[in-house]
Image (tube, rainbow, N blue to C red):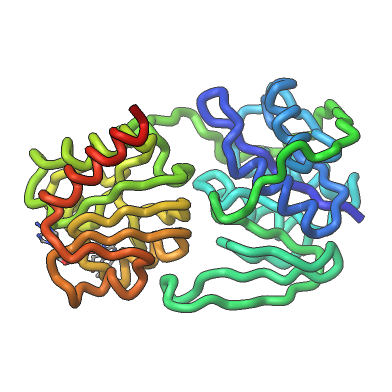
Length: 313
Ligand SMILES: Cc1cc2nc3c(=O)[nH]c(=O)nc-3n(C[C@H](O)[C@H](O)[C@H](O)COP(=O)(O)OP(=O)(O)OC[C@H]3O[C@@H](n4cnc5c(N)ncnc54)[C@H](O)[C@@H]3O)c2cc1C
């Protein structure tokens, strides 16, 4: 029995979640096969280092949820894969359910921890908008979507480095993706970012984003926002973090002038370190913060930026 993972590529680069899936597959005992759609040898090598035993290359197939689901299911059957790991990304969410149906498998979405083995997988996933976690034991076959940035990535895994090139049948594709329009989402991808600097109503207006952007640029961070800031028209919705925005899981989340409403926490509560800057000592965000600063963000953020600049200069 084997583990099958699906890699994702964005703008020619292997997304970090692809490596996280390969590593998570090894935690379940492997061997790990990773499907790489339209990728190259560099991508395959990154996957080998992260835990892939075999990379299955599928070339020349454009994305369609049905087509990908058909091909993934076909490969899963051929490989006898009992656990299928898929990124909890926009695309992954699009085809994971279809794969589960085709394989008559269980489906568990938005998982942040995996352990066990390929017969019985134990997973942890946020429920009730991140208010609690559910620990679930599930028998294979199972399709699991994993939240980006939630898994440790193996380095220098001693892989046999098998590469297979296959051309599975896409089947009948009734819905085809004809065009993708990139939203204005800043320089760093929010869902993949390991650091996020996020602003809320406390930043007072759109003219103050540069204060946060400067810190974000120095840290190589993505810019996030609360819904209040988005609804006020201060920033595009693609930056919104929360229940009706993006779900993120960075190593460091810096919340500036954000009160910490439950709907915001739903999107960032699984961040590893949360730094909150808020004038109100009773703000809800301090309940989840690792470090909190009760002060005016217009004083604190520029001071942080200066300190970071000193570190990096
Ligand atoms: C169905 C539904 C879905 C929702 N989805 C989302 C979602 O996806 N994401 C989301 O974020 N919200 C969501 N919301 C909205 C959510 O309930 C809150 O209204 C929103 O998160 C509040 O944003 P905020 O923290 O920026 O604003 P506020 O709650 O107004 O908080 C602003 C904070 O800034 C602090 N502050 C003010 N000035 C300063 C200063 N100079 N320095 C430091 N601190 C300062 C204040 O003390 C306050 O705590 C949703 C609501 C509903 C009903």
